[in-house]
Image (cartoon, rainbow, N blue to C red; front, side, top):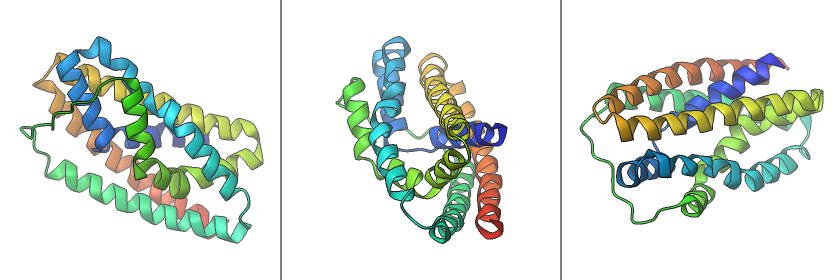
Length: 201
């Protein structure tokens, strides 16, 4: 149970720290509307990810064991690729880079943006999806632990990003860079662990 909870927490932190459309949108909303009105937007993945996870799990639960092991290996390589990309972003981090303005606002827009983004589909198909199916087959508690850890970390980190960028403009980029560094390390070790699971199981 604990290994799935820890994996969920790590992947949640890494996913939230990755620069992307949702994060950029949340930051722009925080800067224009304030953190109190923007915090609710961080809940968007809870709504948009539900059908994505269901679709990925239904597909993954029908594939044979050897293909799941293959997905673990592919997912591990993909996570290592994400770790390298995150490391490059951390290394070349530009604290003065301005965030693009957005003309849309509100939770429905955040949900739609995340739902139409390819990121969640790739992430739940190659990375967390196979782990979720494996854990659920062992016992539903393992699968629930992964989901709980992931969204607890993911949503909390998104809310932290909103709060920091809104209330401490100078400290925001520094904290964001630190989170990128932590997520790069976490992704690296999780990638190795997922590769090991795919090869040894």
